[in-house]
Image 1: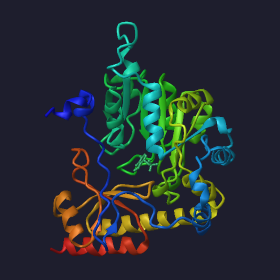
Image 2: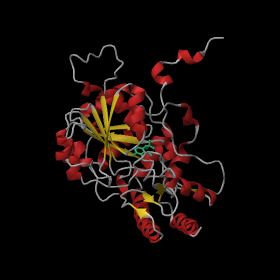
Image 3: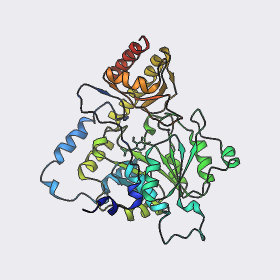
Length: 373
Ligand SMILES: Cc1ncc(COP(=O)(O)O)c(C=O)c1O
């Protein structure tokens, strides 16, 4: 019998797939591991989705998410040509890698005539752990560059002095506010960095609604800058998978060429459109989540945690007394699921989604018990 493994491309055989946060099967766990919104979608969104579940399910959805793009364009004061919607922001990130970065293994790509930067996906570490996986899937080169120890962006002068940063990288991905640290970056600082790059810069703003400022104007001012947003985190729609990019029509048109014809499912379009009609509901929850975040940070600090300032719906905190990985187990024993990453820069920390005030109180109570062990 033949070994079917060899039917798979070597690149895929050797690939390490992205590891998503656990979706627990056990009931009663407080789930603070994947930065989901603790509040449900608005009643109007639920009603709109329910009303759309009828015989229309046999039809293909709008292939260009027309109404949704119109509404998004109105909200961001641009045109639908500035917007690409995808199956979550993960899809739009993958499309950007495919559209802007050369694969190393492409036989038509000749390094002797072009700079290797054309095949480089560049990003800071730590940031969203999907980026290296997307580069690997595409067969591109990766250029991970360390953030400062406090997770701040290195100063532009410092990047210019060092040898690591590639100002011509085909695609630079910046998570802003940063995940997993929660640190926010001033738009002015991002603008300096964007202006210094000659390749595409994609600012991944998955958590922007919880931050003091956002960099969306850069995507409308600079022709090589894209901003990615998602309905998953702030708008309670992880299940529906809707994310989008804002940027120059020429970049957006290139991405439209390579996406699946019906890349945004119909119910997702309905849900996202209804969300944009009820922003007041969501904005009230942003305020609640921010207030809970600040209270949770203070309470954990009282217990001896080193909590980093966050501009997101999660916190990164270094726990006292036991190694962070032991805390993960001890919290799980107390029915709390948070996230731990093995990367050296963050292995002493735990990341916890903020949750409701009740979730946060449960986390503080369990942390207090563990501290007293
Ligand atoms: C920084 C960042 N970007 C993008 C995503 C993906 O979001 P989506 O659900 O829209 O694919 C996540 C999800 O965890 C994230 O943390």
